[in-house]
Amino acid sequence: MSSPGSPGAQPGPSRESVPAVAPATPAQALAELSAGNRRFVTGIPRHPNQDAGHRAAVADGQHPFAVIVGCSDSRLAAEIIFDRGLGDLFVVRTAGHTTGPEVLGSVEYAVTVLGTPLVVVLGHDSCGAVQAAKTAVETDTSPAGHLRAVVDAMMPSLRRAAAEGVTDVNGIVDIHIAHTVEAMLDGSPVLAAEVAAGRCAVVGMSYRLAAGEVRTVAAVPAGDLAGAAADQTAAVA
Ligand SMILES: [Zn+2]
Image (tube, rainbow, N blue to C red; front, side, top):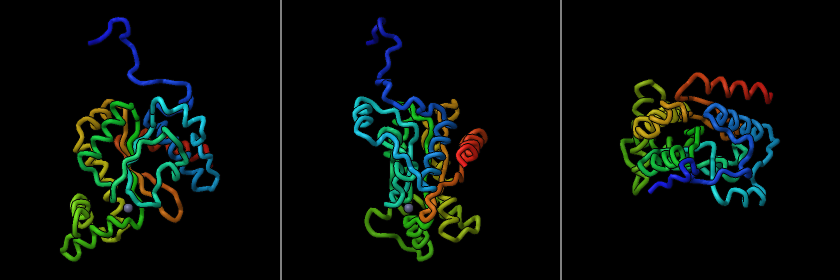
């Protein structure tokens, strides 16, 4: 039952402890991630929002500015490669960034309940999950146990790669990232509606293990976000 006395009450806390520059739009969120990755790549990270004071400040509520749907690879830790801290990123990771119902539900929670303006699909070169799927296709075999479910979930991307004549693992990775962006929007009308309303964007990024840098390989919508990232890069360089 609603209370007429508090029609505008916020369901969650909105506190001054959240960084004043917390990104509120998809473009701002992407620019912030790009800036953090550049700090990481160049070896001058700030490690923001990792101190005890911030830990206490965000204990009562979270307002992450980006959802990261990434591969579980141990070298792909989101807060490290984007140089962020507690309360900044809402992270969902599976081997090969496959997106079943629980993953989509987690993304929908972040976007609709927490108001997160950006969803990033994060893959990387030399991905073992992509290699496993590639091997399964080439040898016409299936992995044992539940790993089969991971490989099966990646088959649409493998079929697209085959249709485009792409056979190297890193080329397949980029196709899989772009396909994951599309599959999430197709599989989640809730997410698609948020994107259509301009409240959220979905970006696919590919990470290079050795260099530590990410590059965008897909974005929905496309135009403004690419400009924001380019502007940020120019400002930092
Ligand atoms: Zn991987």
